[in-house]
Length: 498
Image 1: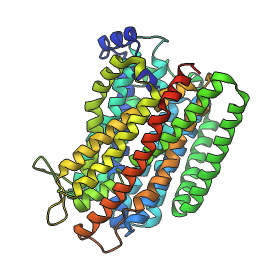
Image 2: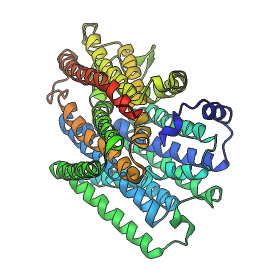
Image 3: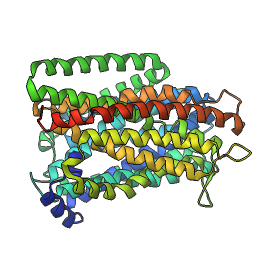
Image 4: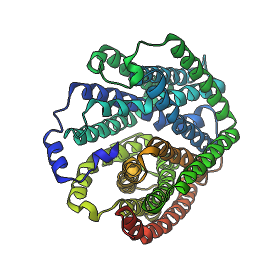
């Protein structure tokens, strides 16, 4: 999918640039529903770990571990939604069902913040519904968008570029808005805003569904099977409650993920064993790059966890003299991505094949390493209270966002380029599994930064963050060096050379 965003053929690129704003009407509908869904999800994510500490009285470490398990389940459920959309209900019906389930989850989170409904059980149930709602929704808008265009349509590159902007624009606005609302009006209203975002998604899609009337998967073209629809709804409720149980017993969540991960890797290498020559070599390269992807996502998930609380404890809460809520610093990630994407696209067009996929992944690792080492450097310039200028965090987010564009933004393109067509769906699911695996590891890494309960002195927390961020930066730097050393060999394999 994202391969289409960053192709380097000059003819396709030039035509897509000319037509980037001239898209068919269904595109704008899909763009808007993706915007509002991401608005809701990232708004919730921006404040969730802080909410768990404030309302559930969790320690920071417990909050990070729970968030890691939650994120793993969110990514692990995407394959279910893709299958339901392609084979059972149809892409459009699955989008609507996923949005409804998400809205219920956000509403339940909002209710859990009120004194009348406040309970741990309700919070876990809400997170369970969000898990399954995201799983049903996530894969289907992009699948629907791909069906809008004929093969080799020159507008496709621009369409997916703008679609990626929808994700980041929704994230940017909600991560600015939700923390402010939670500080002024309370968590209940803040989560309510996420629910409203999904209500807008549903209303928009239902009202404008005629725009995609003839577009969709095979089940979309058939009358709705009421029996199957009810069965999927029942299954969604059951799996939401199962997810809620797993989040209360994270050991079992981790165990299931480990079993699924080992099974999928074993199946992948079983397929590798059946191949020979260049095809086998490319599949092994894809696996190496997936391992690098896990490292990146471990760092990515520090934004709503350790970096979020670092901003709370040790950063001056202003940007360029403007007072902000500490959770709002997370909006820097989508901001820098929106600013940097067009620049990187031009670099790709200029560099062409000279800047191959392995080198992009390696450079992404270098940037992510620097993103954490910059914060360690900044700790030496803290004021007498142990607080840093927000400029250090602004720069750190810039480096990490560039790394994201080089690794995460090209992950699906890498799969499409290296894995045989017969394994494409399986490999795409395996790529999403890297995020789920990384989420669990990221939760554990984040706990290393968690201050002991009752410790709020910035001087003490600064030393802890500085030490751990330095360790993260050095470890990532070593991995980056290894990836740079093997990049020439991987590039030769991709290009079909010995």
